[in-house]
Image 1 (cartoon, helix red, strand yellow):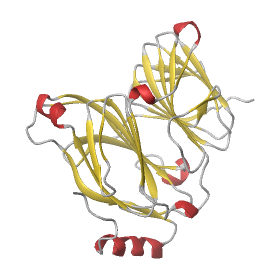
Image 2 (cartoon, one colour; image 1 turned 90 degrees about the vertical axis):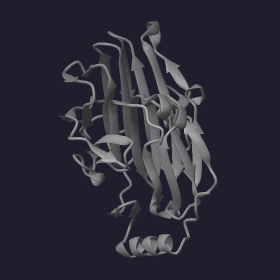
Image 3 (cartoon, rainbow, N blue to C red; image 1 turned 180 degrees about the vertical axis):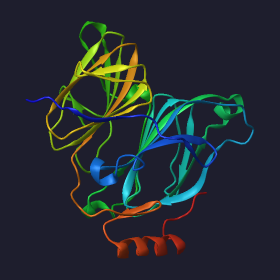
Image 4 (cartoon, rainbow, N blue to C red; image 1 turned 45 degrees about the vertical axis):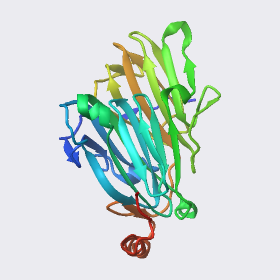
Length: 289
C-alpha cells in the first residue's frame, strides 16, 4: 500500500446558473478535463445558497440526455424530478437520485413546491458518470434513495459515519448499482475525527469539501467548497476533520474509450452524436406527461 498525493486543491470557480434554480460551480470539465476524471464527465456543485420564497418553482424544464448517467445528491433543499419513462420523485435532504439516460431520456428537475414556497438554503451536487460503449444504448433506468436507504459505516469512537452511495467501504456495498466500478461516498466526520480510504492507483480519485475543513494525509489543508484532485500515484489517503465536516469522495475506474460530447449527449463518435440529435428531434426520447 502506498499513499496517494494531491495533484491540486482547487478553489470553486465563478458560479453560473443552470436554468434559474441551480447556482453551480463547474469543477468538471470547467477546471478538470473529462478525460482526466473519467468516468466522471461533469461535476456541478451548488454550494450552500439561500433562495427566497417563490410561487413558481425554479429549475430546469424538459431536456434530453443520452450515453451516460446523472447522479444528484441533495444536501440542503428538495428537488422534484420527472422523466419520459414515467418516473416522478422528490429528492429529500440527504437523498440521492441515480438516473441512467442510456439510449435516451427526457427529464426536468426543479425545486420541490413546498420548499420553493418557503425558500431556504439549497445545496446539491450533480455528477455525470460515463457509460462504457457497450452500455450506451441500455434502456433508461431510475434509482432513487432516501437518506435512510443509504448504507453507512460507523467510524470507531463516534468519529462519524461513511455513507456508501455506490461502490463499497470496509466490506459494505453501496445503495446504487453501476455499469463500471464507481465509488461515491459521503464522509461525515466530527471535529478531530479521521477516516482512511483505499482505491486502486489507476482510479480517478477526488474529494469535494461540502462542509467544514479537512486535513488530507496530515499535510494538505482543504477548505469548504474546495475540490481535491489526487494523483494516480498511490492507493491510500486519510481525511482528518478540523471541524465537523462532510466530504464527498469520488473514485472510479477510467473508461478508456473516446469521449465525444455535445451538450446533453456523450458518445464515442461524432456520427453517434449526430444520430442522438436526430433521434431527439424525431421524438424517440419520449415525452413527459
